[in-house]
Image (cartoon, rainbow, N blue to C red):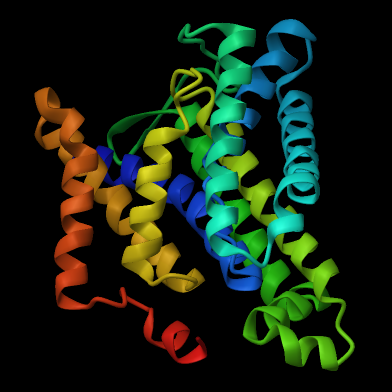
Amino acid sequence: MIQEIIINGLINGSIYALLAIGFSLIFGVARLVNIAHTALYMTAAYFILIGLDYWGMSAPLAALLAIVITTMLGLICYQLVIKPIREHEGAVLIATIALAMAIQEIFLIGFGGHYLGVPPAATGYLFLAGVKVAKQHLLALGVSVLALVGTWALLLKTRIGLGIRCTAQDREVANLMGINVNREIMMALGISVAMAAVAGVIVAPLRVIDPHMWMEPLIMMLAIVVLGGLGSIKGSFIASYILGFTEALVVFALPMGAFLKVTVALSIMILALLIRPEGLFGVVFEEER
């Protein structure tokens, strides 16, 4: 049982980390609260379904196509909907809520409210430490970890990441130093949406796909970002695994009360905020503001 909690906690935490770090990244760089972030995660899940069932693609090609299309859609939505009102934080918040609802309605019209599924890319089981683990779960965990390591390397070891971090530190100073701030915001947004798309592709074979699947991850993602400290990537990473393991523990400890997993996770967030209102790693961000 403990081994199963560890494996499921790692998968949950990695998926939440992909979502929360992407959300924190674009907030840190452009101060955008993108409520449509998990709607784009849902978009990727639908596009891998379309690639497999409607276009007859192989699983890797359908996954790659879903990530590319979702990232392009995210950038187009930014240019058309968010960029003209970027300096008005309240308007951006409302616009991204409307965008998320619009995406939901598009899939509701196109696919109805049916629960759909994607066949696993890897079938069968392996035994790890005496525990039977589905190969699809191991594949999901491996892809999640690779995506997180790749993002970490991109942000900390490349010139692209250096530009994004400089812009996140102080946009005005970055502009004076000759950094193209708008380009860096677009780069950060592209990485952010691509991370959400990777999470959607990973989740598609593990859970059902429906037009409302973006709402629960949105609640968990916001809880993680607040718990970790708004704008803190390190805080989002750690908080993702805290709530991911909490969710796995609730599901295994209370099989009939699995619906309580979000409630328990949010209760932990509230308790932590009562002790530390700025979140686990929110001090530096507050000083920056």
